[in-house]
Image 1: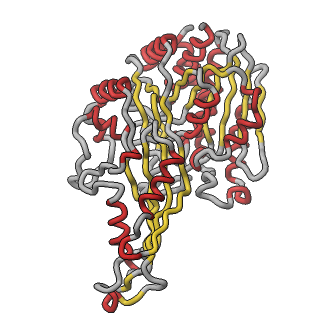
Image 2: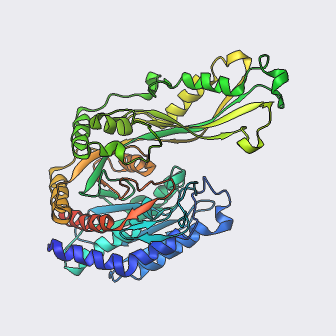
Image 3: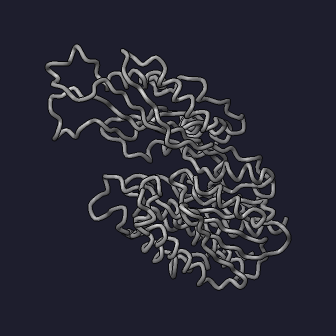
Length: 468
């Protein structure tokens, strides 16, 4: 393989076709169904799928099959298949649904407003991870341009990932044996520790989420009349959260939400921390004198990949300040997001949350926890020597530095599903979400030159797989 030629082919394809398609894609508010109950009527998800499908069909890959699968009341699935040598299959994964808008975009930008500034393309979804389908097929086009063999490749591009991939199992059941003998999975929905080398994700945290509601009255009353007699729903909610979290350190208290960290993951965290250093916390836009919770880079890696932490990501029952009268509110609802270690079962975690929070309601209040999302974490199998060698070679060829391995703090439910379906497969889970790319938040961007080199690396790994 001529690595330089592969890199040039990929770069040209990005400049000629992909960037313009991603600009179109950013304009489509194709929010995941969890955030858009009218997704079918709105048609935005279908528009995003149509954009990707049209581009896939235009690629000069003889034998490429492209189709969109649709099951009743489920988001569509874009599928592509390309024949190759041997009887093995490479499965490539991405998604087209997006997170909601989020506030805080800087002037001139917005979630559905693509802005290209130098090497960065701002807007919701391009990095997380609308680029995936374009990168996957471009990698295959690069191999075909040099006549380099590859195994059969199948692409699954879903539209429900940001909602927990609850539509995906139905499609996997429908596809059945069509997926073939999958022994390499390439997922392009993850992150990178920096933009200087290829990063392979070795684990993903799970998720237990839901809404905690504390109710003390049937209607609001004058605070001057009731305070000191009627307990505050907010104060009771704080007490309940103390059952989960030490408010001084942020440590999650119940043992149910912890697991033993495998020694190899501890060592990988140490190595990643040594490479990233203070970049582990310098990447975040801290306000004022806010400090990171830890100052050891290796411990910071473990915190965001193998330890549980709680976020309160939404609230109801609390009026905005401009509308806040002197009323003792009848109830407080808090949306909780508990990131759990890769080896903790998500479904069991939400049951544990409900049990812990609803037990013995303080001061006789009405307490309820309603789960709305759980997702299993994932821990990769041991990396085969051929894959480790291929990753390092590709990273050296296109970045000039060796590949790195580390866990990620987010959740990709599909990985746990595939781990169950194909227990003998190798996994290359990677992505472009690096420092300040801010997926899910304001000012999300795609680092274009990094994505180009990542695409070339994917091509080389697929070629190395075919040589085994």
